[in-house]
Length: 352
Length: 215
Ligand SMILES: NC(=O)c1ccc[n+]([C@@H]2O[C@H](COP(=O)([O-])OP(=O)(O)OC[C@H]3O[C@@H](n4cnc5c(N)ncnc54)[C@H](OP(=O)(O)O)[C@@H]3O)[C@@H](O)[C@H]2O)c1
Image 1 (cartoon, each protein chain N blue to C red):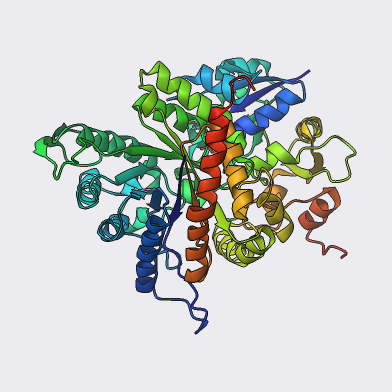
Image 2: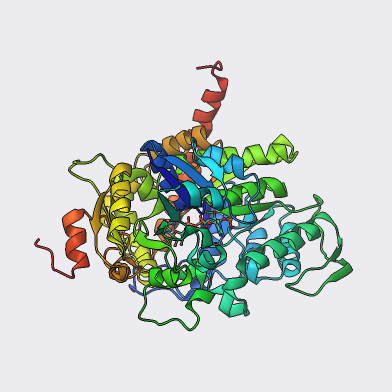
């Protein structure tokens, strides 16, 4: 099972000065986090395109290109690319470039994203969302399938046998569909022949089991090869030496971010009580000790059969050292425990 | 056993549908215009429910839940729902809806549900189930009389319709608090204190009335 991290490039608070770092420093911090994730043996790092002063990772592919040259093994991905407000030709070129520089480690996840700041920024209307998304995904997949592209639609000028380069050595880029749980998105992923990535930020993640089944059924009915039918999960998470400390350490940052988002969207920041519920047992926040988190990942794997789980850790001004420590624990402590548990489960006689 | 219609088989629609099935109701779910594999969606996300057309729902349902994005409320055709009880679970949620057509030129003093009512003047609209997260719907229902039972509000201009929805809420695990007229449901919108907050009956009533709570 692959484990990893994703980030929107949150501004860290400098523990010495007490100040928030600049957005430029946050960008360098993100590069450092990717390098550390690679060093500690994690499989995946995703950058979620974001355009806010608190989370300034607006140009994911540029950061990933820098990461390509300072990492060895880790997958370098978007999580997610807000495709509706971007040009699929440019998205492909950028990620194919990352793929070339990283010797085949780039991936794209296309999705709605959790914020809509990119719509006014790039001059699109949210009212056109469905059409933009469907057309741009169609074009991106067409580009991924063939170097020379012929395509027409209503959201951008047509292409006539236009070469889109560079090309990935493997022939194509892995492109995932990101969704937050609307059932029709799972169907769409299966019908498009794509792997699916679930962003699960509330409730009990195991409740996504019917959606993964829906996806797998649709994918099979659509003739997808078993090996290509893949599910991944992204969730908030944070790992500390022991469970209680992890939950105490993560709480102010989670509360801070939820307070900011809540004030924008009209809901109250969560109370500690509901946080503690969500951060334990079957909840959506994977916050705890390496042992607790490993156990919860394995339990969820039993329900969803996902092949990759990655965590957003750097909420609300978390100091960089704290983020790096959590990444390190995920790689050096959680990953071996998960590997061991899954190997043990696989070795057991079936029908247990 | 009542028949419940669901329009919008997304996160919220399927969560409410599961609660209705668990309560022993018959549940009919209407597909979106572009839906594919809809029978599968219903079979897997709401076992026990049945895919149905808008017409079937209009004929059979005691009440129908409207659980589509606010910006798409105008894509649902409710002409056959004259006098029918329709529960508006939608919210104007900017990250999804932006500023949709229904808001263009709208009186800013009106709540989102009042705009939905104007769009579909023939239905008996009741605002409810919009103020709790979909995952809370899955977890927070409790039997009548349970000490920690969550409360859910109803607001609509037809007292009998409010009562029918209140009885439905009670069946699916929530204490209902009737706020009266549809306009009173403004206190349930995003940005208001009740929105997204775990509240019980007394607290909900007090917050809706703008009263301070005794500590
Ligand atoms: N998410 C929450 O926690 C929450 C809580 C309370 C209230 N609400 C409100 O409830 C509503 C639904 O939210 P959601 O989170 O469930 O969104 P969602 O997961 O995107 O689901 C919306 C569903 O409506 C369907 N739909 C769209 N147009 C339709 C039409 N004309 N006829 C039938 N179905 C149609 C969509 O189908 P396609 O995907 O095929 O287009 C989709 O299945 C929104 O107004 C939201 O503000 C949300």
